[in-house]
Length: 270
Image 1 (tube, helix red, strand yellow):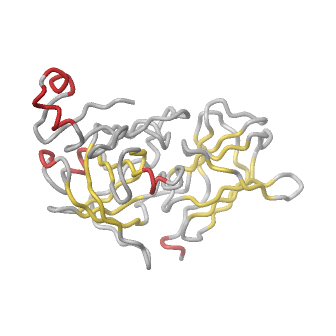
Image 2 (cartoon, helix red, strand yellow):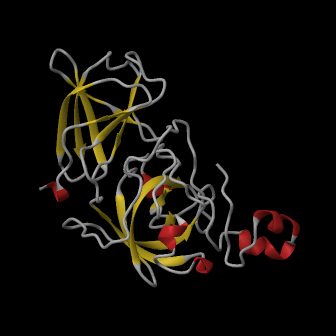
């Protein structure tokens, strides 16, 4: 997906193609599209985009406390023309302000970071964002931010700024949500977890014989069982990176739809 690239000289792509003097500005010195990361990369869109990403795609401008022993990352912050869609397949968001980010390729970790929240500190402020996309050209420690998020750290004209950040619990309400991908059925099942407080580490379903089946995650942020999970209703078990576990029974199958669970992960594995 191509986004309009903003630079410190505020050149547009079309001007940069025509005016040679703008080439240097478009070569990764300002906010951009997460495709190249350049300063800020462009979020890559992948297969598996969903119809709606309104469930837990935004972050918070307020301060947030990290869990014990949380790692502090350092890198550069940039911005791109974000709308909530991207590699994590959450779909566009109508949140205002839109406080989201695209994670660098290393920390994206095959979509394992999707839906997690990062508290970011910059030159002039701080903000909490939810990770909804991948910035392939960004290096370890970098986050490509939505303009609303970037402006809480520095003026947009800065384009690229030093940042530090930590993963923090997301400020969510209500239970986790199971989203079934369009095309899912009893013979090929794809489930995405939404509205979760921490990054998701593991997803399992239980068959009628009582056996738990660990489902692999793909890079567009779905847990896919290529052999299918049957017609449902299902018993699911979800584990987050803090060790919290949510187990739900009676989850009905709704193709391309959301089904709420009955619980939410505790803060910091309490």
